[in-house]
Amino acid sequence: MVIALFLAIFALFQMNTAKEQLQVAKARLYHAKAQELQQTKPELALRLFEKAHKLEPIDEAIDNTLRKIFAEIKDYHPVSLAHDSEINLVAFSPDDQRIVTISNDNTAKVWALKENSFAAAHLADKGSINSIANSPNGQRSATVSDNTAKLWKDSWKLVATLEHKGVVNSAVFSFYGQLIVTVSDNTAKLWNDSRKSVTRLVHEGVVNSAAFSPDGQRIVTASDDKTAKVWDKEGNLLTTLSHNSYVNSAAFSSDGQRIVTALEDKTIKVWDKDGQLKLTSDRHSLPIHSAAFLPNGRIVTTSFYTKSIWDDSGKLVATLLFVPDSRTVKVLDKAGQLLAMFIPLRFRPMGNRL
Image (spheres, rainbow, N blue to C red):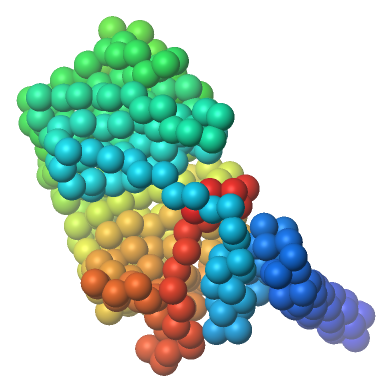
């Protein structure tokens, strides 16, 4: 029986190794093909590069290929998205058909791609617009300004204004956009589809973030009172996740079975859906501002100018260092050794927006 178990484990190890080798081989094949086509079919070469990038971590050689491909794209025509003052934020809509820009001129502009030109819609406000949230299905949006969140739908028609006594920090939608949570001071407010019903989700300290579970049935809020709280969609408290540090953010996994909390004490914690602590990560060098699960079960965190990747046991895998006032990104291992350095270019999931 022992021998049979050993053979089964060995076979599984070989299978995983074979899968990894196959991924690397595919990445190198895509990379080689991209190099071959970069002169004659640069856009196809770019798509092949993206496939290689997803399969194998980026290195200097692949980065050089990317820059060469873009140098060969002759029909790339940048479009100016202009405001009367500095632009603070640029975001794509979930359907990839619109771009939202937020500026110090107290406006957000929605740029809809139509017949290869951009048509803008103006979302003006008396106060400065701090952020924007889109429902995952792309049907609704919310702009956050001073002590209000404004809801927009269809052709950016204003349908409601949600008010707080204090400054609204953020807004988040459930998947189908039927529920929205707005965050201000020590309270998050849960609004239903008609906005006629509002439930207060109260903490003893400042609420830093709120997030819905993928099925929209639960909400998790993170607070400076050193707790994260899980609520049902009616606003009933289900469980409290207690910490020894400020909780900067909390988020659900894609299957809704786990919650990750990002802490000021430079760690992250993972909890099951019933509120049982499953792991505490290694300590980072900086306080962790936010954390989220990746599709492969790993966790990505942000801390000032860094983004870090953690495995499912809470071990730090690598850190991306975004150098202020620079065009470079440095990739560091958990010991702080430089693995690679490259110029980042950000892609949409379909690869046709930059």
